[in-house]
Length: 414
Ligand SMILES: Cc1ncc(COP(=O)(O)O)c(C=O)c1O
View (tube, rainbow, N blue to C red):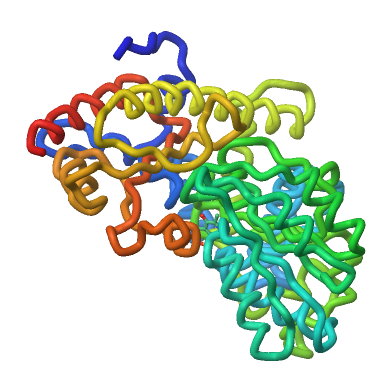
């Protein structure tokens, strides 16, 4: 394959920021193509987390310095996240352990505003974290309808249009598939949802690391993402349209703050992690350019996205030329998609390929990535699922070349 010129690439600029990239296996630096499962963390974020414990560790709402500093830091993180997501109010940003836990809390809260026979629409494409909490509600008399996918990993939009009806109260859909790289047409989904008078919930966990997000333009009611997928620590983020969370009845203690965004946050938060999340947004903003923080964040995400697309495209062309490799998900030529490539290799299970690469210091995922439903629908579950290679901002063209050379070695063994 043609070498990618590495002068001035984003990856070279940021590589020294990530200490874990120095890790070696068999004398060579390891390659992290496991970004869709969680990205590496820059030193600035690691420092922000340890500084929290070193300098101002305290519980919130006390009448002393460290407690006030903790409160200020949490507020600042909410403001940074609001800007990152394109929301004009920090009151729209709730924090939690991870996306799954927040979505479960939200599903219980939403259930309390529904009536027997109300309908929720989910999709076959989604990660189980955006299916399980809604499917659970079937036990309580809510009807859950599932939108089908095509073989190429795109949503069946006719089926979607049929399944959203006057009885639909919520459409819960992923913006991008962590298994197949599909990017959904949120504009169309939003229009269908609004025509039915339903709420729209977007799972942006796999979208947020690769594209800028404008929640207000998207016109969603709920949006969830996870900081550990975009270079931050393990934390979940929930955006709720301003005013809406106050109308819902999440599980909560009578002693806690009853207003949004706190209304859905139970117990003592992981303050150190929240400090890390705030620093992640500051770190990302340093990659972009522009006058306002929002401009810098949008520019950063565009820069990251186009760097990753270039790498994914190179790998895509290489994989396509290999007999015995079958790539899943929508083709790059025709569809907007994330830089996440999933495939199978004839004669090897996904686990065998991942282990072969892992032994050689190339970290990739295999299986269903908790997106079990699409992998099941594509009839891949009983063969061990897919091999998934995800590009992140610190990956380089040379790393893609090392991967393809290592795949050449693997193919000699088949
Ligand atoms: C698309 C998507 N949605 C939801 C989740 C669940 O996120 P969390 O691990 O924060 O619960 C993941 C995690 O891989 C994901 O990729």
